[in-house]
Image (cartoon, rainbow, N blue to C red):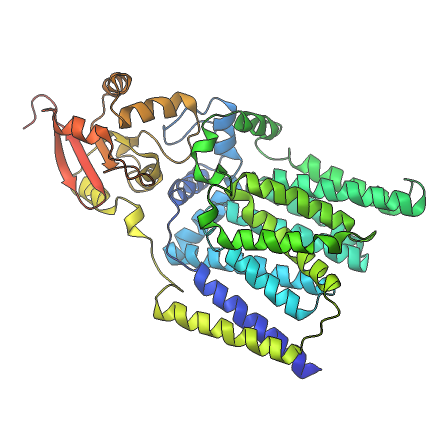
Length: 486
């Protein structure tokens, strides 16, 4: 028995190390830079800002206040890791957090009494489904908090130890100060709580039971702590404003998972597995987990960014359901564990051969590294027009030297409309451009998705007051010739 147990944990360790390696890719997220810039600003000033410290956008609205304040703890943690360990620290932090989430998936599978074959299989599938969600941003902490909350909830339901469920509001308090994903966490917790209360009501014949009172208290306290954050009730105003924002659909993270199906193949494999497991939820004990899986699954289809939250929450329930449905099939556990161990080691070896695991540094092809070095070397300063994808990198690297026009924080129509017109050199865009009186322009050759060339480039190349000061494979840096300068 001990040998089988040791083999199971060895297999799990090999699986997790393999995923850790694949999660440890170079820093690539365009928003990472303004997040650590915000974290540095908070620590340096000793306060959470009420106005945009980088002067990019109007913070005097619901959207602005939410962006400035809702992720402050996550930003501070990211910057602290970066300041101590540089980019490699961020890479291993990200890999560690995602691997921890997978470890929790497997632990929850075993808590549910799921055979290791289903636990290992669903953990591997969950890992593949979130492999594209390695952005270095506070959202990473949302994945961990969500996983921990359902670990506490599942453990409480299994053991009845009240300290487990009392810990949930504490986790929610940390989460609400780290990332806005806490709202979805409360929705999921509240839905589960309602189902739990209904189940207990039919079981006991009335609502006045200690179990119902405790669950209601925990769900209520978790909702209250959502407003014990700098944004307070603005959090809920932001959700309403975001849902009605016509620009939301332009960002890939809010795009439907159906539209981005090519980037989410393993997610759809997980969806199919989930649908196949649904008959196993038709049970007076497990129906509430089935309701939760269906509800959050639908949410994940509406927006690409919700995929990891759904997968990490649902995976153990899906595995347990499959186990109940297929319990007549008894697979030799030694064979299963040895097979998974071998597959994990093969994939890890392949990753080393292709240099796809345990990477270092940043993905330089995503950022204007050369242009920034040129600006610094030539002491160029002033107001710069730039694309949103490069704004965060410029904020971090040129703080105090330039004022950028756009970055990844902006879903504000007041800013995005002139930004779009300027890039496409419309008559209205020319008027906006002249009003801003830029000193520099730094843009890529074209749209990263459609590959369409930005007309602004051709426009500037034909204007005598603008000259190309630097160019590389990524884009062009234009500098304005002011009167009296050569």
